[in-house]
Every structure is written in C-alpha cells, then in structure tokens.
Amino acid sequence: MDATTFKRPPTEDAIIGTSLPSSAVVESSPAVTLKRGASLPDKLFIGGSRILGAALIALLFGIMAVLVFESWPSLKEFGFGFITSSEWDPVEEHFGAFPAIVGTLVSSVIALIVAVPVSFGIAVFVNEIVPPRVGVVIARLIELMAGIPSIIYGMWGLLVFAPFMAAHVQPVVIEAFDGVPILGTLFGPPPIGIGMMTAGLILSFMVLPLITAVMRDVFSAVPTVVREAAYGLGATRWEVVRLVLVPYTKVGLIGGVILGFGRALGETMAVTFVIGNAHELYASLFMPGTSISATIANEFSEATGEMYSSALMELGLILFAITVVVLVISRLLMGGMRKKG
Amino acid sequence: MANSSHAAKQDHKAEAAPHKAAVLELKKLCFFYGTQQSLFDVNLTFHRGQVTALMGPSGCGKSTLIRSINRIYELYPNQRAAGEVLFHGANVLEPGIDVNDLRLKIGMVFQKPTPFPMTIFENVAFGLKRHYKMTPAEIEERVEWALTKSALWSEVKDKLHKAGTALSGGQQQRLCIARTVALKPEVLLLDEPTSALDPLSTVKIEELVRELRQDFTIILVSHNVNQARRISDETVFMEAGRVVEVRKTSELFGSPKDQRTKIFIESF
Image (cartoon, rainbow over all chains, first blue to last red; front, side, top):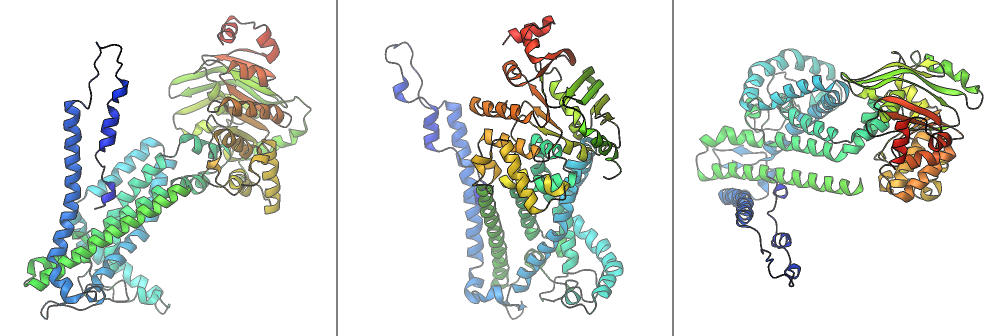
C-alpha cells in the first residue's frame, strides 16, 4: 500500500478557519450572536474521518511490523545473503530469495512490455477513433476482463494457454532465434509451455484492463479545445495522439504503467499456476521459474519449522518493500514531471 | 492525401484573383446537432482582405457557422452540415475532401488559448514540419515571421525554447494565432479569440486582427458588439440560426435596417 494516497483529515487550523474569528462578531449589535466552532454533526464527521484515516495508517504500519517480527529469525540467520543467494533448501533449512525476486521482476516486466503498447492502442482506439457509442461498448468489455478472478486466468493459463504455447508458439520462436546471440538464449528450448514467458503473458492479460482504463481516463482529461486546435492545424489523428495527447498526458500515462506494474508484482494465483515453481534461474524465458508470491502461495501450507515459515515471511516483506519502492519512485517521477510540464 | 486534396489544389490556381475577391461563399448552409437544426439556409460571401464579424446573441449559430467552414464539427459523430461551403468555387463539404489539407488553408483560433505541451518554437512549428517540406533554416525563418506577424516576437525571442504554457493568457492566445498564421492559410477563423482574456490583451489581439487583415480573409466570431464595430469591415448579424442582416460595419452600426439588429446593438 502507498501511504501517500491517504487523505488526511483536515487539520486543526482548517477547522478553526471555517468558523468566524472572534473579531468578526459585531459588538454594536448585541442581538446577533454568532456561534463559534463547527456544528455537532460536522464535529462528528471530522472526528470520524480522522479516526478512519488514522486506522488505515496504523494498519499499514501494523502489517509492516508483523512482517518484520515474523521474519526476524530468517533475517538474523541469512542477513543480506537472503537476497543474493539462489539456494532454496527446506530440508537443510537454507533459504535464498534471488530466483524468486528476479522471477517477480522479470514476469512483471514481460507483462508490461506486452500490455503497455496494447493498452495504449486500445485506449487511443476507444477514445479517439471510434464513435463514443461503440467505444463505450469496447471499454466495458475490457473492464469485464478485470472482473475475471485470477484463479480463472491461472486455470486457463495452465490448461489452455500453456499447451498452446508449447505446441504452436514456442517451437516456432525457438527455431527462429536459434543461433542468434542473446535472443537465442532468451528464447531457448525446451518448449514446455509453462514458465517465465507464459506467466508474463498471462500477467499482461490481467494488467491490461487496468492500464487501459487509466490511459482512457487521462486521455479524456485533455480539454476538447486543445484537441480541436490540433485538428484545426491540419493534424491527422496519429499526429494529434503522438504530438499533443501523449505529451499532454505523459504524467498520467506513466502513472497507469506503474499501477499496472504494481499489480503485476503482487499477482499470485495465476502466476503460481503457470510459472513452473522452480527455485532456479535459467537464461531461457521458456524455462520454469518462480516468483515471490508464487513461492509463498505454494509453500506456506507445508512450511514446517520456524525457519521455513520465517523465510516465507521475509519473502513477503521483500515484496512489500519492492512495491513501496516502485510506488515511491513513480510518485517522485510524476511529481518531478508535473513541476516541469 | 494526394488524390483527395485534388479539388482543393485546383482552387489554388484561382489564388491570383483580384483584391476583395470572394474567397468563401456559403450557399444554403444548414447545420444539425443530431435532429436539432441550428443553421437555416445561410447564404454569405466572405471577401479577401476583409475582416467579417459574426455577431449575435449566444446560441445564434455564429460559432457553428465557422466550425462548418473547416469541418472541425466532424470530430463529433452526431453533427452534420448540409448545403455548400464554396472555397474558391469548390464545395468543402463534399465527401472525399482531405480535411487535413483543408484545415491548412483555413486556419482556426479558439475561444481559449490552447498552447500545446511543448516549447514556444515547437508550438509555432507544429504544422510546418509535417505538411511542408521545409529545411530547419526555413522553419526557423517562418517561425520568426509568424511570431512577428502575431506581435509576439519581441516578447518571446529570448525564450523560444521555454514551454508555451508558461506564457500569460494573452501571450498564449497570440501564440495560437502565430501557430495558425505560420501555415499561411488563406482564411483565418477566429472563434471569440478574446473571450478569455483581460482588456489589455484584448486590445492587443484586436490590433493584431486589423494588421492581419491585409494578408488573410478573416472571419471573427464575437458576442461583443463593440469589438465587432472596432475591428471588422463587414458585420453579419445572426439570430436563431438565420442571418438577419449583412452590411458594411459602419452602415450596420450607423443605421441598422432590421429592428432586431437595432435592439441587439442598443442593448450594449
């Protein structure tokens, strides 16, 4: 969660500011007495929202505290090595999170590489090209995609998409890049269907509705006159999008992408189904891997012993930290741009 | 682009027409928002080297009228124009006309300043790079020319590479005029260009419009009677989607023929 999004209850000053300062009471007409301070319902409302706001912040820090507390044994035992080690051996009680961290980042980046251009295309098409009535229908259908539970994506991924990848996509890609440096390694054999690539693609389907919705929102926020002015200078639709809409909405677009990234980082169920759950790092994206959330989901029920469950807790803590860092970076980026723009 | 702009290109031969020639002619122009008609058989002629003011109460169709001339209304699916808008004799409302090319020749400035999120220089060069094969040096020259024409050059020449949005409202509007003027259109459509500006900026824009009159055919929408009187050569008074009176500005304000015109003028 991102602490900066919480609306703070109004400060003491603001509340006092709403009532009249004492000097405003007109002395010469004693018949009129102005009430001071906020009315009772308003006081209740302000107090109530203040409690709720504080509760959310308390909850956030509570989660963080519990995560740190629970993962303390692991933190103490492995130290910084937990992040850099690739060994994951529950029997020997030796744990390293490197493959899971990399898997989380790689699968999310794949998701973004696929989803961002597609979302952008859809948002432009729906908002700028088709008549609004048709656009709304398409937009609603894409929003429906966001409503599909992630377990369904996982099952579909495992039972339909992964076999399809293995049978029709991966052999072709492996063949095409065979012998090519870097790409030949990234898209190397075997074509087994489940793996990092498939997980990334499934993730891209899941973050696509979110990114599309944000992009549509920011496009709609561009004033009509600005759009008309660009068309009025003889600009084509593509030119209006590229030269006016995108620069105008840069900040919001990046916000949408980061929101999608945040979603992809934490997505659990679908990834668990298709990523392959191997605590190893392979150069090929077609090989199985794991992610932080997939590891936790898979192994939490069988985590016997203090160290094992503590290691999983620490994984959770790392995911929490990554998400916070991503959101903070996005805030800083967007803040900086807003000032410039 | 090449085949569809064919009709418009032909007209360019007619460009050498004598002074005060008719550049635009509206014949039986009707306009519809969905099923609601907002212009009724408008017939008007606009001449080169003149400022024609369209004046009338809100909702009389004056903005709609100029929006049909460059077909900007087409951005909205339920808006439709019928009749003829003849630009050097060719009907721009015909399907198959390249609207991008049309809008290069008939430029438009809007009610509110609309600088694009880029530098002042890039704002003015916006249309140039893509529509004309110009070298960077030519573009620079044209940008300076347009900014000078728009009475903005002296104020911005030292900050051409600063954001256009950082200018004041009046400067922004002159920037938008410069951006349109840079394309050297034949016709300038000005849709209440001063309605969002302070009085001082308004005066500057009005002076500018009078200057630009020599080079362009200008159609100015204004709901401010005094502005129409100050800067136009010819005034069109409209009411409820119909043209009530069209005359030389001095005559129309001196002795309005129609009672409705008279009431409108006197209400100011």
